Length: 295
Image 1 (tube, one colour):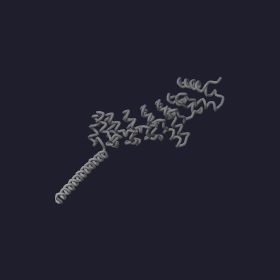
Image 2: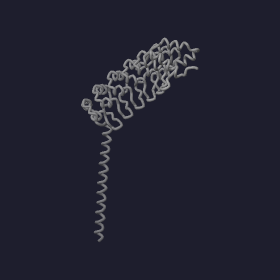
Image 3: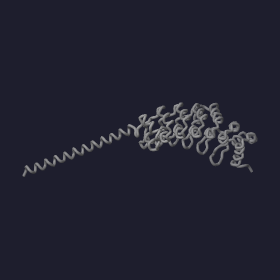
């Protein structure tokens, strides 16, 4: 009786975990046909649908990644969360594997396919660049930005790679992203720009860097709060002082204009009410005068 797909996967997965390239190669060569070899190379686990290639990538095993691809493993497979093998390589900070995977895509596929591979978004809208920032894989980021990665892709929360780098307090990555034209003023679903994030974290170094690079100092979020407002709310004294010195306001000019319009409207309504009251009084006096004259 043949082995189940699950038991076959477990056997080959163990070989990957133990770095046993030689035995894995023997197992693949022992298949009775190229089709069976391809099928074996593309086995995935039952839980996440992560392939053998993905596990080899996250463990940084270049030899096994190469062996699997040469045996027919699919470069473009995605797991149940929508993540591809490049995401796994970067999650494991396996720079050499990530570089190899991208170079393979460059050599064997056209521009559109390659771009989709590098810019693959998972079920939460995240790319491998979001992951690279998360794990502080600077070398991977440098390589990605040189090879068609869309630096300004937002996830389902509206978060860019720059938002994340600021949130995690990585000035080296922030500088790298800005060097490659990362958008400074993108708002997440709460209306926060990267400057809002840095201000709330009292990260004066990043606040200075973002402002110097052209961040809108008085951008407001969905609540109408500016970075200065959040610096006050979170007790970020250093940031509050700096933003104040740069012309920061609690609310932006649009909010001020709205408030001014509301005050003006109230004044007009008040004046109209007074005029109406005066007119009513005058009419009343006139009627009383007519009654006295008639008597």
